[in-house]
Image (cartoon, rainbow, N blue to C red; front, side, top):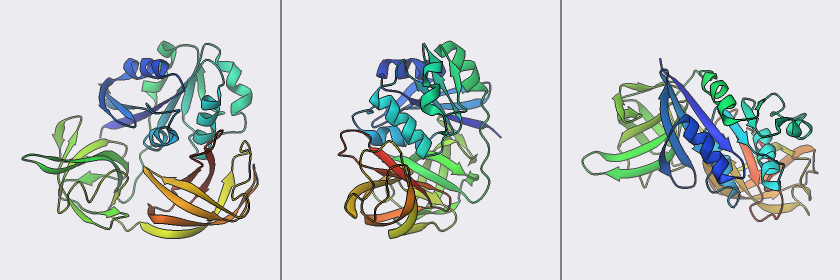
Length: 315
């Protein structure tokens, strides 16, 4: 069984992020996020660069949600770096490292967060060995993948690219896409442009799909062998970052965006939760939102002048 290492490369400085990515892999697909791919001692390495951050916060969130390891590279604490720390903490990203010309400067800012245990390095060269040595845990169970690109290929048909988040996917598997509910048969599988009979947890895959088009099963859809929930409203216990300037819900109602995996869905929040506190709120989504038990929902204030990643809920 191959091991796949998916590294979210984080930070405000695009040149520094690119230095990390190029030290680990070769550049591939680019849109809201950029993928870099390589093989190191049999380990499949994928770097995910949040290329549109800090202008678009969902670029950061997508990179975090596709990764099993994070590298934050920054030489000072800026608002964008602070937002990165908050988002990674809200999503519970425990495995990673910080690369900086003064890495210990971040100790006070990550204390008490999921980043507190991240290793710290003063150069990309030092970090590279530790990153490549990381062994992500296999998540066993029913197949669950997330689609990050979908398109049509002449002579092949409908193709989806994504990351397998749980289990083992095999050729001829019959899956269901969520939230669309479309039935999908796996006609063929590729990893790093090579045909394979199966993909394992954390593999970045390309599959030829039977029974659907790329327009029907696109970016953000989950592919699962078991039913997932797809809802239009939800009551959930929500934790709010202590760094937000205004309480969640403000005067009892607020329009936010909810993110699970690569889905970003507008929602109406009913209820009020103060900064640094937790409380139950009602979320009414403007279109169906799919999730699995244990997923983390991140709440975003896209129009905020300060912190945009404001809260999260374990589903």
